[in-house]
Amino acid sequence: MRLRILSPIMAIVLIVCASATAVQGKEKEITLNDLTDKSINLENLGRLEGLGNGYDEKARQTLITGYFVTSYKYNDNGVAHGHGNEDHFGQDPANTKNFGFNTFTLGFNKRFSDHVWGAASVEIGRHDGGTETELHTGEVHLIAPIGNGIDFTLGKFLSPVSFEQEDAPLMLQATHSLVYQFASPAEMTGLMVTYPFLENLEVRGVVFNGWNQQEDNNSSKSLAFQVAYAPTRWLDAKLSYLWGAEQANNTSDPRQVVDGVITVRPWKGWLFGVEMAYGVDQNQSVTVPRTDAEWLSGQATAHYDWSRFFGTTARYSFYDDNNARPDIHPTQARTMHEVTFAPAFHLFPDFFGFRGYGVIPRTDHRISGVDLRLEYRRDWIDEGIARGFFTDAAGNKKSDRNTVIAEVVFSF
Image: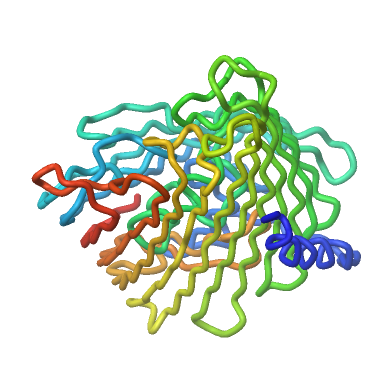
């Protein structure tokens, strides 16, 4: 069973969590007097989603933030059908050679007190050949003054599961990995409850509508549970479990997923991220009817900042679906692979300070006000029966794709 492959990683995360010790004292409250216009800590001021703890009166004013993305894109083969999480670069027709204005996102954050605050954002983006306007996020936070404070988050918020995040300024490259696209939800609409046992150990539970992929059964709610622990400033780990019915008109056969993420910054300038996800769709195998569809996905990312103005990222990810999960079309057994290399020029570095990559902001990375990213990505797929997840310009079935992207991400 593929669970054996994931067990060592799960064991490492659980051992790390079990070794948590009490941390002396509490983190210092952040005020605007501690910050400058060129060094804003997003974990405290709350970019779009408004994460944070302590504020003075000035910081309780409404904050307006956002970003937009422009690009040039080329590929040889394309995808003519939707699949996975929404991905502005993943569903383009063959022989694409386009300049584009891809995404515009505008958000605000308002804190009324240390116990009540909210944030919302709207996204306009190109998707699947058209333009969509989406209520990207909208969340209200109610902090119960019990123990270290229980955070009740209600609304639509970004998923806390994956190593990667959805918004372009928080990414290291232009496109998402296969594990982000197929192995976890990008967004959740529901109720999330978070409790920090220590300043570096927290748990959260979520009840939400569903994954919002293809044929979700959103009338039957899904559940998620997560433990996150950061033993040092250079190591962050989180282990998540998700359960829920994700097939239309079927509440009897749930999907179960175990997802583990480890983020490490062992040396100055380096950032490593590893994620593994194992999933089971009960009684949903297409290759062997009335048996479970098991799948395994993972990614490894390495990033190095050569200077404050330039960095490079290399990534490999895969999605092994040899039981043929029913909500990936065309349905058949396959294993997807992709490798990405992405240099990035930080044209206006440090404007947004640093953003933690883990749930607990220990492992962090500089966010640039203006990024120029160049990406080469190669996708290839081993398919069990009929080849042709991709198609070329003449309509011929293909099992690989090459993509080149140059994009500029402007944050404000």
